[in-house]
Length: 246
Image (tube, rainbow, N blue to C red; front, side, top):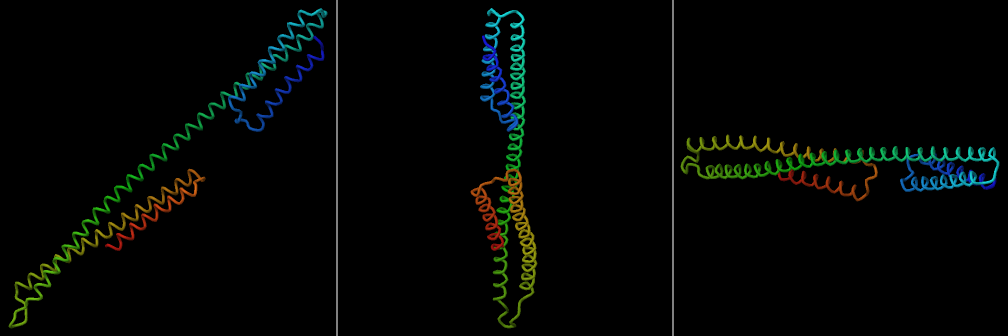
């Protein structure tokens, strides 16, 4: 066993230590388990090699003082290796915990987004059902109003053939129908406002949902943007159709 070979082993240990520090300084949390385990395995092999050297020195014909001196230096190298292995394992544990926390936050964020989306979709669906129901009621109201107008036209087409006027009963009937038409008009106005307000709420809910998704993830693809725009256009189209109908 020569001093030169011992120095060579010491250089290898220093190289491994420097290499590990370099990786750590570049990306503190980027060392994967595979790379870390490879470094540990290399250090373990180096440790075994040094232990073999110690045994070789013990079995050599060197004087006792020289043996103790070399063994002392080699034991320091083993201590350095053990310390480095402990440091890497500690980093692995820390890195694992950080990844678990990040994953947990990501899952919680995804669950919250999903929950919010489901809630918004439920609101939108209820609003659409409400709009559909009110539009159906408006259709019936217009039908009833049209029927009342036809009744008035029938009465107006049947004046007294001699006097050219209408009887008291005819006038009373027209007054009654006119009052009913007035009430129908009030109901139509109320339902029309309700339909418009509900439609606006649905469009607003969709826009808020899109805004939240944009804040959560600023890397939304063009396809997603096109899909969102298509949905908004569909809502506006529905709103326009309802407004036109009313």
